[in-house]
Length: 113
Image (cartoon, rainbow, N blue to C red; front, side):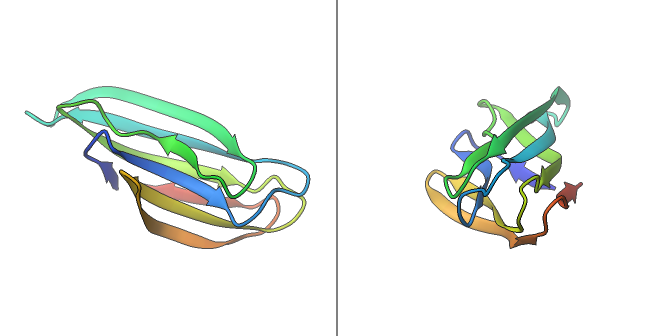
């Protein structure tokens, strides 16, 4: 499980360079739990796309008094060439690589809790 326990944390991804033809989209699902009793306060999902080396936020940090748990994400290389993808935790500007590797064209990088 990937846990975001502060509003200053975010889950991001980026490419090693610009796309050739098609953007590289993502989908993500997560839940928020209350810090006080760990009950689920929200279930959510998101999606978007990346075009290059500028990091794209998949999930932002939670509101005060909550912890955000990333349950799954999928990054699909829809481009016509392979892509080097970096998934990272951004902790208030301090970057921590979670995964970095090559994803062939039309393949997926998948994470599941």
